[in-house]
Image (cartoon, rainbow, N blue to C red; front, side, top):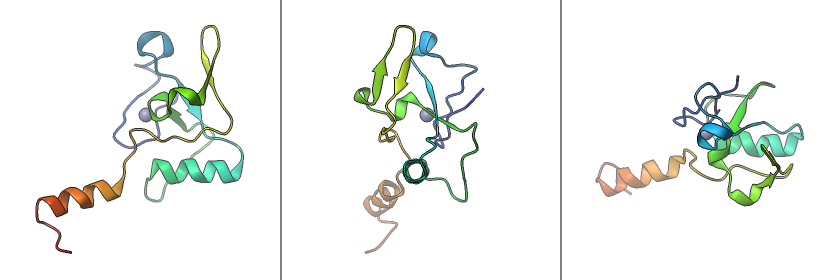
Length: 102
Ligand SMILES: [Zn+2]
């Protein structure tokens, strides 16, 4: 029963599925270099995926998937790129509000 590893995403396989809302869950890749990139994208402090950790399909562009009959498979080279916590954008907002002086 995986939930999405991306902070603030909150998608869980209990409440989401391909049939229900088009969400699928994808385990972290086994290839170390690729896994490293996923961890980097998930962007959580002091956090490392277990073999049960997964990222939901919201974070992948449609061309990352191979579409099968009742499900879809993530291409082995796919990297999450959508709806990710990006620290830079918060700094940017703070600059706009005048909280951060450059
Ligand atoms: Zn997610």
